Image (cartoon, rainbow, N blue to C red; front, side, top):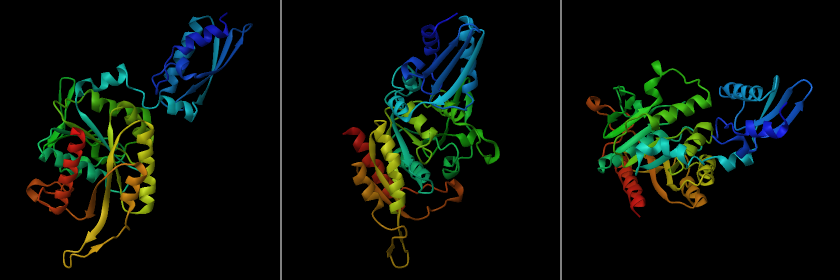
Amino acid sequence: MIDEQTVRELVGQLKDPFLHKTLAETEGITEVSINVEKKHVSVKLALAKINTAEQLPFQMKVVDILKEAGAETVGIRFEELSQEVLNKFRGTATGAEAQDILSPLNNVEFISIASGKGGVGKSTVSVNIAVALARLGKKVGLIDADIYGFSVPDMMGVTKMPKVRGERIIPVERLGVKVISMGFFVEDNAPVVWRGPMLGKALDQFFRDVEWGDLDYLLLDLPPGTGDVALDIHQMLPTSKEVIVTTPHPTAAFVAARAGAMALQTEHEILGVIENMSWFESKATGEKEFVFGKGGGTRLAEELRTDLLGQIPLGQPDWDEEDFAPSVYAEDHPIGKIYTEIAQEIIKKKND
């Protein structure tokens, strides 16, 4: 009959399905109990996440490896790793795994557009920064990583679907930007009801299986907040830089600070803050009305010790029925010019 040391050695070789670290590294074997007479082994294991689709196949691996070693029956209990341990391993995919995902994207500047909450215009900002960079002659890709609230294709007026060439996905190019989105793979705007691990695999495919070609910048429109998808992206892209979007409202800026804090905790550089919906300017009088208050973007930038990249007023793009992109501002539109200035500042920061 196997002893406790053998159990720890065998099970310790298995990798946590989410952190991709062995249980020996995460100290995920918390209890081992052996009944020699009944040839029964009982283990308590700690994983990054429990009650997921990945848990059952992992459990079967544990049972198989222990039965092969001589146990007749195996009992397994699961618990979640402590936040302290998770923080230690989050964002550490900097070795062969991350290199494998990012190998086709060498010398690309990754920029994640994040926000603390929904409704602040993060996707609009993502789309217009991408288009502005393309207008300045840069080769740009855009991943709609807001899996549950995908909206980039509609905002950019994309009407085509990606093509598949062999085993590679060819992104749709629109307004000089190569675009990929979960919206391309969901029928009739259906809700996404996948579990977190399945979403992680979809995002992995966006990096690994899409034929991006030669890019200068790859922008990611992140889901709002600091949930699993945002954390997974931080782990996939340890070199990503971030732009935090807020409104002038103090509460929005307070919540946005969490997204900035997550970037800093995972050692991601914050390029700056963009304050959206800063004011409404009357066409009749030219008077500015600060509908959502003042100062949120400035205070957030100060708190995160970064720059305020720009303030975007409320205003609708001019719609062109022949080339319809409902959320993209024209290059000569007053707000389009602000996005050009922001894009120029981003390029300057890269070159500094």
